[in-house]
Image (cartoon, rainbow, N blue to C red; front, side, top):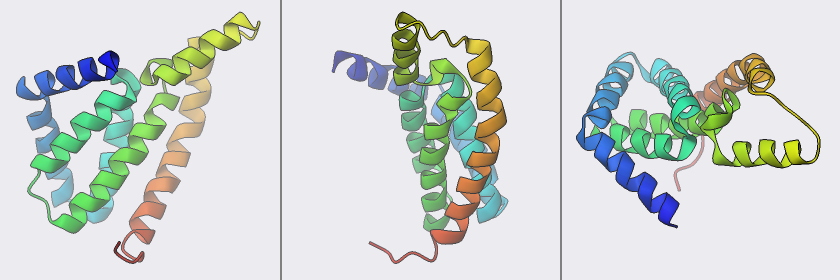
Length: 149
């Protein structure tokens, strides 16, 4: 619990230092390009940030940044789901993107299965972009079709 609380404090600190505003500006520009590019751009941007920052704080930064954009609600909804998708897939690029991945790599190493960061990243870079693209396109197509909760 203290770890999570510490991450929230760091994220809010980064937000006050301008990271959230920078993200909101980037997302606002994406929103102006239309819903399709906003969806793809948000997903890929979230993936990149999550791969170097860790997916939990990246999700928080994304949520705060999307909340600060002046995009229409339908666009922000697409961006929110794209952000969650990107933040979930971002850790597939680098092991530091997810604490769970680091723990699994450690467990596997103790069992004699050594997976180096280079191999992990090589496979992640081959598999993640097409999976992310397919998921974001499906999101863009299906979200407007689904009934509102």
